[in-house]
Length: 247
Image (cartoon, rainbow, N blue to C red; front, side, top):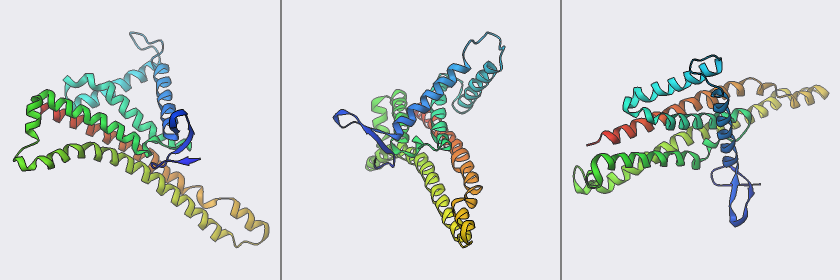
């Protein structure tokens, strides 16, 4: 089984050299799970909530609406579906590691794709607000010689967003794996000296691997996953709002 440069395993190859990786399969599973969950929540909704399921659905929608309008303003309410989709994808793509599956956010292709979409929206609103000539002129300010630096600064936004989430999720996965392996070695070193069947049982029973990895998982998989999804969406909203208000 091959592994590509991003660390995701290549599961199989289609005609014309098209390779299907763990990232693609797991991302489709995440999207399918979110779609089924949303379909279940919104099934048979009433004008007045009569079920806990509908109450939860309305609460989630209201929470995202408040999140977007409090950061971008009331006129950006229509932006709620995009932020909701982005946050849920980012969150569950990280939390899927709790099931022992490869998190798509550990693949730079995933986070780079989201960052590029945000970059396109930022550029669109800058051009819409200032016009093509105004946007081009802004790249030459405060003096013309700064143009190359300003252009690099434009592209630095999606690059930093992509690498921030990718780096945090991927590093958490690596650190957890290293600690888990180190605990296995330590377990054998501490209990492996026991004679006979006791030593064999101690080596096979990962006593030291029972508690600490679970605590680390709470941080790297749960807390860090939620935090990185929140930061990514927050930056998306602030960058786009700033671009739309540029004059």
